[in-house]
Amino acid sequence: MSRDPRLGTTQTWWTNEIAFTFLFFLNLLNYIDRGIIPGASEEFSAFVSDSLDTTTPDLYVGLLQSAFIVGFSLAAVCFGNAIHYVPPFKMVGVGLVIWILATALSGFARLTGSFQQLCAARMLSGVGEAGFQCVAPPFILDLGGRSGGRWIAVFYTAIPLGTAMGYPWGALFAASSWTWSAAFWMESLLMCPFALACFFLPFTWRPERAPIEEDDEVVVEGEGGTEGVGGVGGAVMAVPVDGNSGSVLVGQRQQQQQQVVEEARHMTMFQEACIVLRRPVWILNALGYAANTGMMIGVSTFSSKIFLDFGFFASESSASSVFGVALSFAGMVGTPLGGILVDRRQFHSEEAKLAFLLRQSTIFAALGCFCSSLSCFLYQRELFLFFFVAGALLLFVCTASINMVTMLSVPPPNRSFAIALCTLTIHALGDVPSPIIVGAILDAMAPACAADLKKDGVVSPECTAQVPQVRQTLFIICMWLSVAVVCWAVGWVEATRQYKKHHAGHHHPMEVDGGGGDGGTGEEEGTKQPLLPTYTKATTTTRS
Image 1 (cartoon, rainbow, N blue to C red):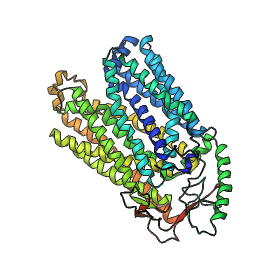
Image 2 (cartoon, rainbow, N blue to C red):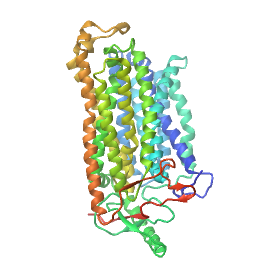
Image 3 (cartoon, one colour):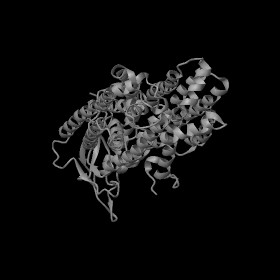
Image 4 (cartoon, helix red, strand yellow):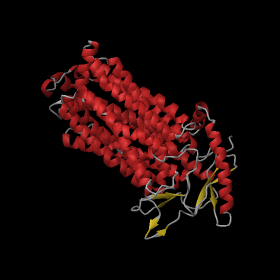
């Protein structure tokens, strides 16, 4: 067990591991909530039909998910900026109180028979979750240190794990005498201790504070004029530190850090947006993330229908179950694997790390695109599933590196806002339009399959004749990933260019093997292995 000074407390029981475990299970509960409606879609469709007296309930069930996304995306941008004005984890606590009230209202919507209440409550749930999702990732990245990749990866493993738990959670409650209302009420009760803890646990982290380095390193806030990765509008430079100058540099660091804090506290949302959007690496990464998300959501939305069109399964429930299990397996294996691969390397600057992360995303996304595209032309079910799941696993490997690039490509005070703006981007350009586009392509290329209800899992002769067009549609969706590959590849080139520009006078490799088994902590047989050589980051507060 270890205790990091970034936790801001002298209480020995409050360790890194306890803080991270707290955040992981909080994130897990958030994603269990997201899986309730998809897991009990038939019961929610029946509720919508009774509430609105409509014959097209699926449209309104989809609207419930869209309402959550809209509330989450818009609130995230506000929380991402508000983090400079209020203590971050107090803000998380307020958001969780909103989330608790919203999920309780979601349960009461069944008793009132009001679809409008359920829709508003789901949007409010998104608002409540947004604060946590803006604060936790940059906090974990700072806390993880050289093992930050692994910590971030495990944190995001809660997405497939929580979703996999959320589906049966919703289905089991909906099929019981307690109904789906109890699914929402139960998670409201489970969230109460987390919300209360955010107000009382010793979380004192602030994003404006520069990360604390190893004992033999000092972070210097310099006065350069070149824009780069670290600091507020400043460059990242390699500065050797010796014992004689350490105390002077510490004083400079403290003085400049206070200036950074004051600047961040008076930063408007527009100013933060300008800082983030000036970073080409951030823009390219966000566009690639949107394409990756669009492909994943587009496939998952129509997966059971496509599998039935192919004749691989006898019922929609079996097709959905197999797809859900396979996707969850891919996420729970691929996501932590990506973090482990990052931590096997050590870097002497954030620019070097950015280049490596984008290279990793490019390579694994390209491999994932190849495997998933190849599966479109395989007619044996087992082979199809093998390559399709392999493609999904390779894409999940990118999760840690994508999110780390989102944060490391901007100054530390702006990382929460960068996450929020990236969230808005991937929803606006990814998972919101993709199901509409995929549905339109399916209707245009295989209209007979769109109208086929597949009673008892039997595909009509008309749909069977159009299965090749369905395969072509799936191929088009998979090739959507090529946009992500191109964006991340260009980002890799740009990050490498920035590294060479700012480190032209240093003759050492961008990265070294960190030894693998220790997670990149630099510890081996009790001996500390420094980076090549011991350097620090110097950032400037001068705006260009």
